[in-house]
Length: 334
Image 1: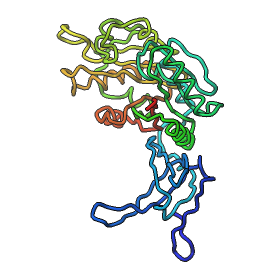
Image 2: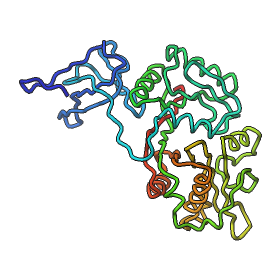
Image 3: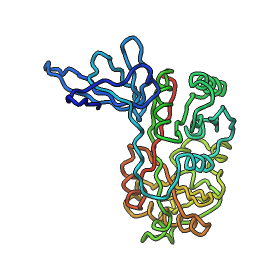
Image 4: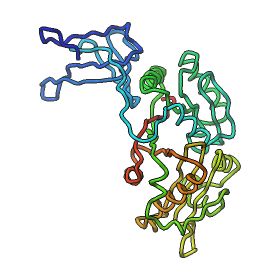
């Protein structure tokens, strides 16, 4: 907050600061009649008729009555503090896109429209990594028309090249009636420590092709598997599928996984274990086997994606040396 030499808080933002990242403090009333200060940091999306809209990094839009303000200022973006291989958001977004390719794709200014018969949001959303090159409202209208013409729900995967741009675009989306959902984090690490895990990799079978057994375990292919699903799963510069057969042989695999090697990067995904076989080290074995193959192909860095509410996966990957690099969200019309 801005404090003057006399120790007073001051509001040093105006409607002219719309589009900038701000920090504001307001006075709010409690149920018992008392008052308290509430701080909000985010992009100042709008300021009309005495009400300002601040969009947080999560995509949440907070409406604030200007009469409740006690302090406010424009603030710079917080520098990222992270460990793991050096990488930009743009590099990771591009690598992840090559590892999960749609059936249909076309550019929309600085964005890319993607469709794959409805198989996963990632392959059926517009990837927004930068300013679209046209007003946000115009771009979102084009996205809506493109997906509705295909009988699909319009989605935008907002994974901007900087935290500041992420907030700015999230604020623009909120201003045009699009709401955030499905928060996901991109984590990075090194494949060598994963390959060195003490795990029973002898049970893991690696293949260039995805078979019926693997598909039966993968939770995203519960319905009939068609050409769109197979296209997405088989895509990628160098793709490997891992399978741990069920010892009883009377069902699907005990565990599966997928890895895409792309230059220095190894991307891990679709690591799943049959509930009846959990807590036996199978996820570690799958990851270790895939990491060893990635090292053989020259990979020196690793990435994966994990939803923010998947506590077991987050604990597993933390133990393997992975750490969060950045987060992204999907947006859809409200």
